[in-house]
Length: 250
Length: 236
Image (cartoon, rainbow over all chains, first blue to last red):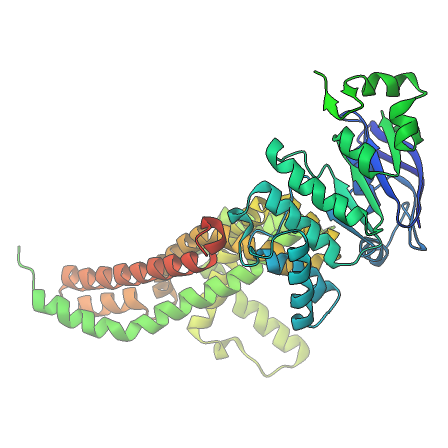
């Protein structure tokens, strides 16, 4: 379904990703963990080419892109396979919640406007924002904006949804509402890759956890394996700050 | 000192007929300038090979020389080029067929293009990078992302500067008297010297320019109010 082969990425002389191999099956929920600067967000952004990998191969849904010399249309094709939920929400500021969700349907997928509207309202209701259709992003709280962001991603019916630290810029009391929406769509069997710092959430929702440090995958496994009995020293060190019941001990 | 107030009034009335000329020069130069400026800004932002050097040279040369100089260069240079080309290719078009105001349109558009390219560039750069990333992430092409997401937001940001430039152009358009186009300013000179009442005629011209400027300010405020709805969060 999704296959990354030897993804490498350098910013100048600093190599951020040192050859990542990753396979994600259809319907899987994968959480990517790792300390700041480990390359986890860069990896996620490489998957839809917001970051240009220096080398490697990306396959999503039987479409393979070689990162050496991709054409514009190949990049565009790859991007259409995925959707992204951003840390900073990145809702279109000049469009209402409803317009934000409709935009991709109408402009990219050429769905007739009325049909797109019905579908978008449905999705906004699903994320609990049926009453905020005509609100602009500036009128919404962070949690509400992020839920619109999730609806916008869902609307495209992508093969995979990429979550880039979806709760990191939220006030603590707003984290819950966003996580519960993600939890809900995880249950629907949508393929998701989530970069997160919410250990408890990763443990609960993900079927598969990956620990990245310094541009390489240090360890991977089920949540039980990784959280319960990490094998690598680096993983143990990282997880020490976190106790199994989902509370940071700082 | 004697001021002939009734003469100011009659000059005002007489000057009204020159308003369309001034407005036409301002509007054409600003619209063409905005088109040129947008293209130049995009070329520079995306560092289009070769072209972005040309674009940079254009901006520094035009901004480094007075608007009057551009007008004179076009006025004296363009006919030479056009007639040479006509001879070369056997066209019947001659430079004398170009109306005087045409030189003003061309030269001021070139002037405005350079200044506006910087205005547009600052507007585009002020739009958060996350906006275009989000557009890409939902599968938009660069053209769609710019046209639907980035430009509408950039326009809202650069509107005040645009209004400023329009006012500058309105006032700068007085230079056309050098190529014998009769705009408000040139007409006021004609009225002044014909009646030997300079001060009064120029007061009348000043009043008209001021009025037009206020009009531009009002229009800007109206547009700004409309397109900035999303910023103020004022819609329910």
